[in-house]
Length: 261
Image 1: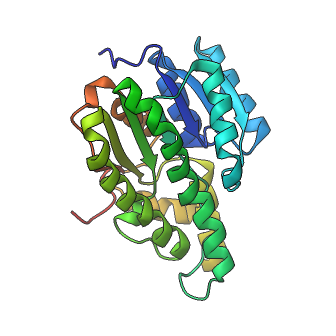
Image 2: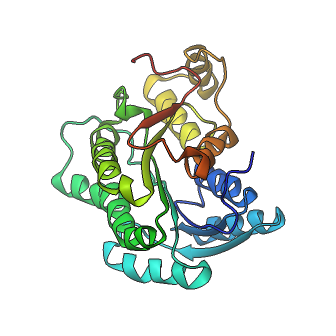
Image 3: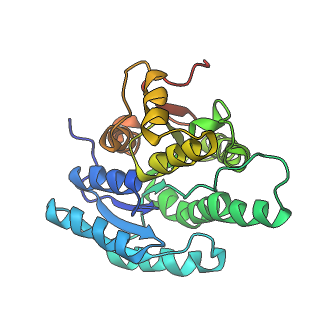
């Protein structure tokens, strides 16, 4: 199936991480020209190299998403490489595991800027170019905590819900311009982040990481953690011409894990 992404400029925020790198590779395999943005220079270089090795085109930018004032300059750099991005795929790092109560106002503000304002401001910066092209795709990765709050991930559960409301509202505003806006939600995908959360739970409960992971796998109907490539393929479809009638929705890639409707 031709997804219609050949030559489309794409910007992947958080493209150095496990899911972000997989998403960038999936888009590149479909012919998109990828700008990788991440705070970790080594991760940026690794993602760019992986895309080049696969025969794709990529450029890397070291970008601290918490630095809201730098967004215009970072986007301008992306534009000079492959033209105005018509696809924005957004990942952000998550806050540490915490209860939702007792967190400082400073923590709420810091993570809100990093996880929420950065994505919204970058999208606003790109929307004029998408409107001019009469085509655009916004795919925002959040967490299954926006569907069913995850114990001890209080900051993440609360803050990421902001992106769901934003994306749904934006979808109606930009639909007539040929732009779609969707949320994608991972279940237990085998990444360093999931390994970290399993380790933290093991420490809190005095168990082995293996026991925690086995318990988690037992709760997933398909009986395993997901592969980053499975999540990335869904993103590539949502970013494609083929998904032009999908907008304003939240799509789970969770192996049936989340029990709610």
